[in-house]
Each structure stands twice: as C-alpha cells, then as structure tokens.
Image (tube, rainbow, N blue to C red; front, side, top):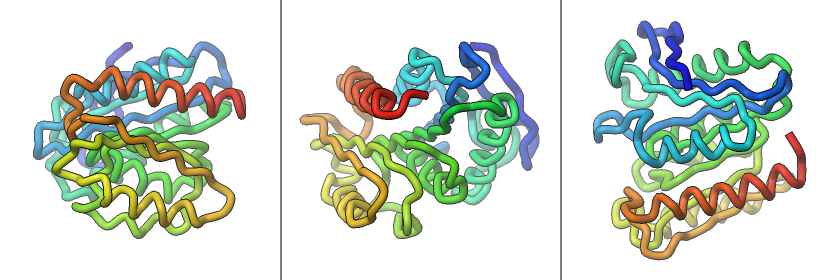
Length: 216
C-alpha cells in the first residue's frame, strides 16, 4: 500500500495505492467523507471499501481531497473536490490502461462526489454509495445514471433519514438498462459505529455477485 502523490489543480494530492495483480486488473477509486466534518482517506468506512476491492484484485486508490492531510489547497464546496476526483481517476486509468472494469465507491460526502464523477465518466461499470447525503445535496443530476450500483444505508441514520435515499433509489429504478440495489442495515447510524463489519459483509457480497455476473 504505497503512498502516492498526484499532481492536482490545487497542488499535490496525497493517496494510497494498491496495484492490481495483472495488467488488465479492474480499477477502483475510493472517496472519503466530508473534509469539514473530519473526513479523510483513513476513515474506517473508506478503508473498508478500499480493502474490499484490493482483496478482489482491483488496482485501488484512495486519496485525500484538497486541504486534507498532505493534500494541498482548501475546501471548495464540492466543485474542487469533484475536480480532485477526476484527477485521481485519470491517474488510476493512466497507470492501468488495460483495466477490464472501472468502479467508484464513496462514503457520505464521498458518495455525492462519486456519483457526480460517475455522470462524467460513462465508462464506469459500477458504483458503491454508502450513506449518500441525499437530503443535503441535490442528486437530480443522476439522469440518466450510466451504471448499476449499490446504495447502502443504516436504518438508524438520523442525519440522512432512509426515506431521503429511497426517493433517489426509486427514481433511478425507473430507468431501463441499469440495476440499482438498495440495502438497509438494521440499527446502523450515519457513522456506522459498531456496524463497520456490516459494510464489509454487504458490499463484499454485492461485489462478488457483480463479478460473478461479469468477471473482471
């Protein structure tokens, strides 16, 4: 898990990268929670997502967005953070030009940025969105959504009530050509205290199902 430094629009971007085990290994980009709420690439959910993809042979990158850790710049209300995500995916793709699949996974604010990135990168094959803040940000940009994916949320999330996520899921499920999975973990809060293992289990099962349907 070597440290990598990427050149970004606001200066260097700090990341952790695990190469794939073969030249055409699939790639995955992991996005962390809100920087203003202490979000960073070593958040337990971000690390869990990272490890899930690494275990399945993906070339996997997680990184700190601008102003976090060793990454330069300042928080930019999502605009600059989306640019950072695009830079990170560009780097991942340039280092893995023969990648068989492309995935984007994010937690909380990272899920919001990840879904925006998805809209700009139609080559994306799948996504994981954990606790997407659909009551804080407008997710109507997902029209149409270019890839199938998983929304994972906790029933005890009082910051983003499940009904808010269900509105997005129900809208996306009217779209043909993609499949949206939506899973609720009983008793899990927005921060997944004592439920990190549920993220590992549920996302792992989803990835295995998708990779069985379409091997990477």
